[in-house]
Length: 160
Image (cartoon, rainbow, N blue to C red; front, side):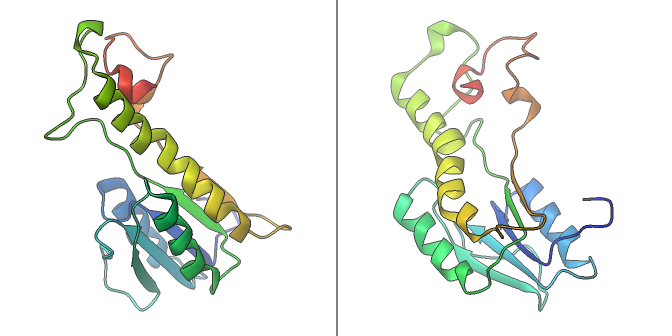
């Protein structure tokens, strides 16, 4: 987010996570930013600011993603969409240390959250970006998701 261009209307999906919240905090401090949509499962914003609007979004549900896009559409065009979601592990999903640890249900869940969810966001939000001029759609991943930097192995579901 350097240079002469900076967005006016922004969307951060996964706004209550560590990386998403950091983007929100940075965006609200920038001159020229008019609105920041914080979209998350909780529907809350990590900051209180007049520029911030919040809405709930289950990024694994096509209907939820489409509904959130319809709400944001009133503020279109959107100049910046950041997808800062992801799941490496939680109470029911752990990183696989070897191929013996693979579980079909856990793989499907990891793929739903880490690949299908961002694709659904792209499908719903790319039409809100302006057809001319500069805009950015960014979907982030952690380094552990790198296929080329896989010296330790494991984490097959996340890397997929």
